[in-house]
Image (cartoon, rainbow, N blue to C red; front, side, top):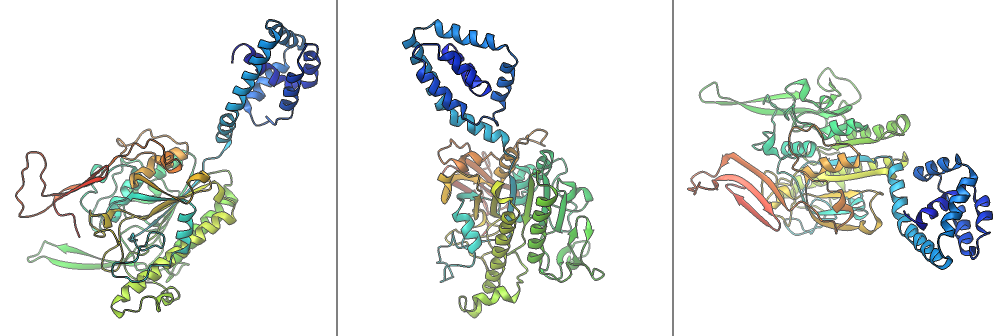
Length: 532
């Protein structure tokens, strides 16, 4: 600020340092009544939180009062009164115009980074929740069994063009690294229990970066990014705590898992089934024949819900000034299909076809999932954390078509058609502008975008990563639909090991027998066998 604007800064500062003395000086100057009124107004303003003005005030207080009076008088005497008044009013107008921006900046500087709550459903179909359901398909009744999810979505920003991967491990790898699965070796399939492989240890995870930014980090539920070595597991990958399972799925009550591997050392090869328990509290086994602890025979979704709400309560008590990252990675409604009768019985009059018995179980599992979401949000509110929280809800892929519902999208889990990769997703947060609440964003958003989005919300940094990010910070476009969004394309996958046999192709540019999918703007190309 120059000229009279500079004098204004002096006067504004004096107005709350020694306002009465300055008014006595200015009253000696003719036609200063308007200035006096302005100073009276400024005197009443609360600037206690403005560190910059407070420092300037302290500096000015140390100067001699006579010097300050002289500065003001000399500046005033150099200008004709009319010109002075005009410039002064212009400076005040400029000050008023910028006041909102100044206050916003001060508020942002004083705000704490938000708590980040990520809830990931497993195998949840696009038509399996109320707010996206359109009816149709094989189901005559529009689902109405997700009131908590629907209410959260209705009060937030629904993601209308939100994409994940068609399988569990690939989606989780891109979520936690912000990098396409072709960069981490996860573009062929999921990580099964017999493979000595995990998310590459060189990869920096979202939890690593959030913990580096001062967050307490917690994972509850499914991991499915490998466990052949301790260094592969969650508490070595950035999470302060973990309770859940390492592999693809577990029985909801016994917490066992049966998997099949092929013994090809004999001729002909034979399939061998192995059953083992897979439930961990940190790195300790919390299941099996010799386990008699608190999780024994408890329904897994109930365990995850109680653990998540306990974490929230403990955090509010023990770490009230520390931000929290809580990743609730649900198994529901992934197989095996198991649910307490109290949820299943709600659909006996809705799903009556005896050939849809599995659908009735899945509906109950989704109802249980919805109840869990509601209890987690209630806990945030009860413990005073909700007002400074960002909640993201997502499915990890589309539903299997044998019992899930992705209508009106084609295909399902394991498919590169829309039913396999276009997911239910929304953001709910009191920090969102009121203008975007209860709206749908049509920005193209991918699961890899959560990595830079969360790290930037946490005021962290993106240094030291294993390679370039494929994700973009989506917060600006979520809170402002007019934002010039950078993402115009998504590489859904390229898998050279999955070929469409018997197809003769021109390989001069790209072998179209390779399974691949790519979206650019409103166009999408699929090659090879995209799945069903």
